[in-house]
Image 1 (spheres, rainbow, N blue to C red):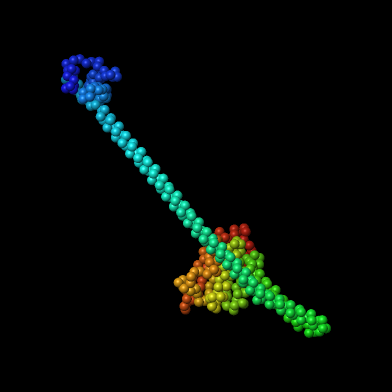
Image 2: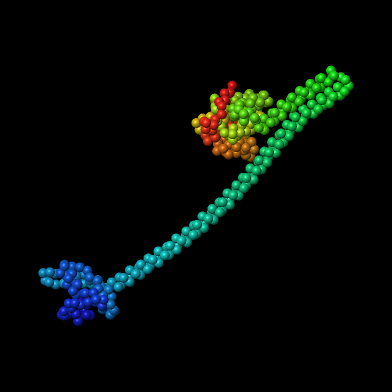
Length: 359
């Protein structure tokens, strides 16, 4: 017993209970008889005079028939635990608040970064679109100028010659000079045939009919033959026995790339020999154009790729293909243009055209 509660000494407290009716002494005796155990009850705390919860441990000494034990008031422990729990809960709440704040700030930064990148990419896309649009306009104007020059310098002059020949023939016929009218009429007929040939050539350059009718191989063959006849440059075209399985976009792109490359060779390369090789393979199709000209100038000597090279690059990129340009200057000079298209632009076997065998 507590030294402050000596009134409990030398008295029988069997049946003693706490304020809640929980047995105290009888439970002590039962635990001692069983050997040992814990018991929780409510008891007056000597230091405060108020009831508090106590946990007691009782041990039985069977030989002496004694029961000894001790107990502690756990109100201070419970108060400390409650204070610690409240502090932990407060810290957890503060942590959640910090995490929420950091999350909101992070989301704000991500959103702001995304908006900045989106606006920046949109501006870059708009700038590229404007540049591309301007290049399209420039290409259109250049093509219109080329056609206008060919019509004026070629067709127009031939038609004027035909008109003079017909007018001369009419005057001679009106004078009754039938034999003299034959020569200018024949000359006008020759000029008219030449004009028809020029119109066909211009039409073929704008849209070759052989490309739609026979396929890419014969179209490139006709293009190289015309290039060799017009420029005097030795031109070779080779291909395998290659079924006409390229889709329409791929055929047009490769034909225009070859057309642009031959135009650049004629204008700038000073080459004496050109070769074009077209073949299909397990990964798609590849066209390789090689010349022995003076090659491209160094990168630091030019401001950037010309509109012709840009057109090649853009045409092949629209089809998810690749364009490689290898050029050197000096004794081993020359330029190699290699355009490759993926297998996705080859038609399935059921849709392929007839086999094309080139001479």
